[in-house]
Image 1: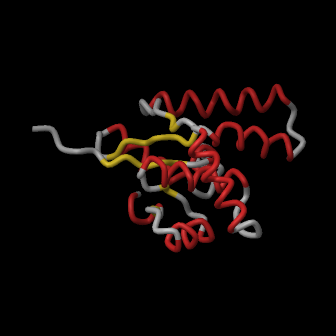
Image 2 (image 1 turned 90 degrees about the vertical axis):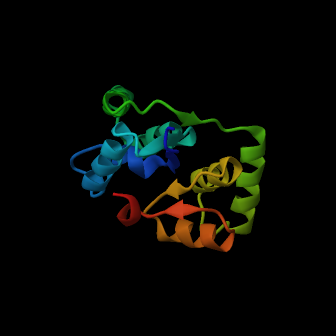
Length: 150
C-alpha cells in the first residue's frame, strides 16, 4: 500500500526562492528535494507566475529579462518534477475578494488569492509571511512555515 503524500501549496516567494541569491533558497531547495523523494507534493498557486512577473515589472526589469527569469523558474521546477498548479476558479476568486475586503490593510490581492486557494482546496499554504500566517490562523486555514517542512 502506497503512503499518502501531503500536498503543500506554494506561493510567489517560493518561486523567487528558486534563485541562489534569495534568502529562502536553502529552504526552498530542501522542500524541492522532499518533493522529488515523494515525501510531499508541491502545488503552485496559479496566481504566483502573474505576481512574479508584476513584481519584476514594478522593479523596472525589461520584458526580455523577465521572460528569461520565468523560464529559469520553470526549468528548475521541471528538474524537480514540479508540474501541478492550483487553478484560480470563480469560487477561489470571490473568496479571495472577501478576504481582501476583510483584511484590506494587511493582504494584497495576490496574498488573498493564495490564502483563498489554500482554503478552497484544503491544502496548507507554505509561507514565511507572518501576516498571512496570522490571518490564516484566525480564519482556520492551514498554513506551514518553512522551518516545519524544510
